[in-house]
Image 1 (cartoon, rainbow, N blue to C red):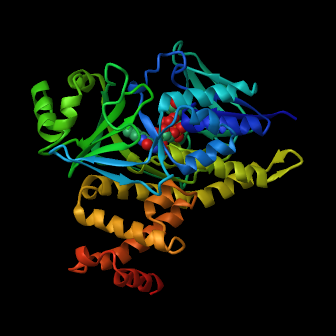
Image 2: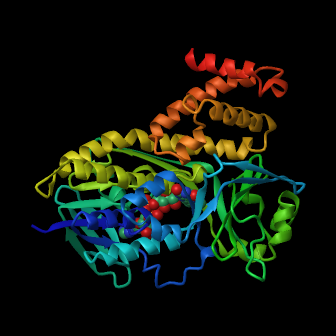
Image 3: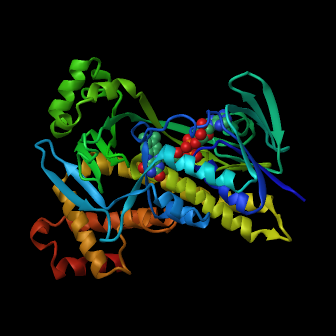
Length: 451
Ligand SMILES: Cc1cc2nc3c(=O)[nH]c(=O)nc-3n(C[C@H](O)[C@H](O)[C@H](O)COP(=O)(O)OP(=O)(O)OC[C@H]3O[C@@H](n4cnc5c(N)ncnc54)[C@H](O)[C@@H]3O)c2cc1C
């Protein structure tokens, strides 16, 4: 019997999940609201690039497509912090051979869509917007965005990978009884800027690093693109003394950059052009439950949209694919998958990790905004790194748990909270600057772990 599935949304998670389903012998129809990004010109600098880390790679490996992605991934082994006076400090993310990777969203998305289609049993229909769903019957209601024509499709199982503002969730799930939902916008928005390559195509900043200009209540970050440029993102409050609201004209923008990010300003001749080209966007955390109803399951941002400060939204969405695939294999008999059971276990197992991913993202928002330039915070990280090197079985830094392991987000978050409590006590010592690398501090941490 032919096995059919529908995926709503051909974004990052939808296109990866299509590869998994195609491998499992499913015939897949994907409906995507946008036009085919592969036919539009994708210039690396115009599309946000993302940081891909271990759990993302694990999911790509599971689908057998890590080599195809490796070709377009740039390793970033640490952060380079830029102070106002132009001084830079390098902070490695993990051990010497560890890195997170900058990949172009458009490039990654296009590659995965190609691979899904190559398997021969995936058909992507573009300009097809989901406008509703019959959850019990597995029906998706659609509209052709070019002609306005309305149509519908039905399958044994439907995956809503239609992002943080999911139409399946909004149009159908939220209308059912006992469906929990919340959406919280943070005070900050973001704007992208392009830092072009030098004329000879070389990079204007160190290529293999994530650059941060932390300035207390706001920050600028930059990730490398393959063509020598950097995609930079300014995160800042919408309102207040230093905010997007105050940058109302070109002069104010120039003054702000000259004063706040002078080294960046010197490097970026096209600042205003880039400023006007890119929109100001908002950021929110979306929580909901249940994640499955009838024949539908939410995956990726549709289930657990988060703020981007841990660089884990996509990685977490990719991990949904790993988990769903494991359950699909577990509950398979004679080629038939027990979807009700898969869905039940998926949401029970995965929801705590979705929640933890959101907590981690919020936490790192404060770390990047307020602490990465704080000498005490830097010392704390040094102590943690030293201790974890001496006692790798007793301490893995939170950043490493999240970015360089497949430890469940919920376990990492709980361990991180405990570590934070321990480090607060250690950092409270008045003489910590002098004794930070002593046996005494080592013993104090060991005692606190066992307490
Ligand atoms: C500024 C920023 C930086 C980020 N940086 C990182 C990072 O470094 N690392 C990381 O892991 N994550 C990062 N993220 C998060 C990451 O972008 C998301 O988690 C990821 O895109 C989620 O993938 P998705 O497929 O679930 O949703 P999306 O990528 O949003 O894809 C959803 C797809 O569904 C389509 N769609 C929407 N509505 C409909 C409809 N009604 N009908 C049909 N199709 C529809 C959309 O057109 C889209 O193609 C960042 C996010 C932002 C905003």
